[in-house]
Length: 578
Image (cartoon, rainbow, N blue to C red; front, side, top):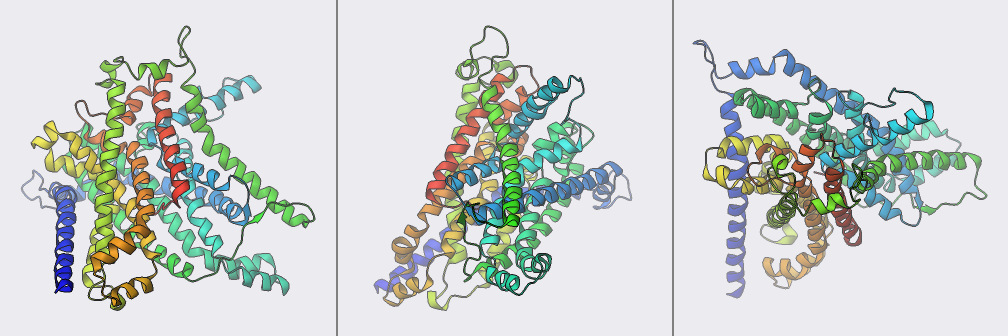
């Protein structure tokens, strides 16, 4: 009797979970997505127009084709450069162990979740026309010509994208090296096989799935780039993301913007599906394997010359990547203490954060925008964890008995349903919410709700992957024993599963908080009234001569992000995958 009651309670809980999840996705993703489709396939004004007329004319327009080509080209080049530096650096971290290694790895990951606008500010301070690098260059060589120009150049955009995504390659390729079957390599060396042949025949086939998986992830991040291209690309260079934003916000061309958003969704979905295929293959390759490369202490005495040269090469690339990754962040923090004019305190920026100055420019006080940032991030994190946990529970629910568990049609359908939000960019998410709710009370007076929910939709993939990774490590036999002894599904979850995933739940929450802290694209699209965040404030002030104040705001975001990752370092690993 008690077992029957538990079964009914279990079913009721699962039904409620399904209803809550699908109600959320339906209201704030799928219905807005349908709204985008309705605008994309509106008829034109001519009498012979069809529902595809405006859509076809939009995607075949020469300027839109040019921006689509640019989106692909810059993403491809950025990905190749990230691979070129990320693969050797990942090998260095996989091969050697040294004090502070985990800390350095986590700090290298910080740029990935830094607000794009903070990255921009760091690049302006470090590599801009009056940036530190160009000032030093001009002083040393007594010239008026700059060494590096980041504005209106493809080079500037690609450099920012490499800075932003290099850590993705490093983090995802370390497990590839760690799971390499190194015994085959050692045997081949003993038999006198050349290193190039060993790499081509043994190493590369084992790495290729990891390389493609990581490359696709970086490609889609660069392809959907918004803030970096919006600011550095000026008018000449635009990604589809920037083009959609300008068509909707600047020109009020809803049909054209929706048409391009649909094209972007289709491209993203295709890339995500291919990515999931290769990512699944990497998991299968890693399952049950002994670690191939065991990290060893750095020791150069009594080592062959070639190994010394190899270490020197790898360490130089690693040091360059560390300098490239850390210098813009350090520059922002230092700039926040440099007075922008004589007689100003080094702490002026931090003092101004607590005042009502700059309200005319920002539309709100800096302090209120700081509070908005923290409140939005905290709220988004709580909601994200709730829905992520529901997704994981639904995906991992053991139908009938745990020991007889098989993938069901329901699970496959749910997996497909949650793929699409993962493949939708922040601007497209914001566009859908805007088109769906722009005439409603929630947008007109409670736009903060939509801002928070857009952060939730962006953060859910990361939190879900973190929790799911922990779930996949649970020993199924232990669950089988509990089930055989008569424990209900809910009891098993409460006493066994939840304690084993709680650490990853916290990690996913902190990661979501860090992402929400600096979210710019959707927030910038939706923001109105008094609900701006620090990212919006930095964007409005970055073109002013008063760099100290935006640098102060950016420093706070950097510090909060670094603290988040230091906590993650104590708790567990970071899932950068979608």
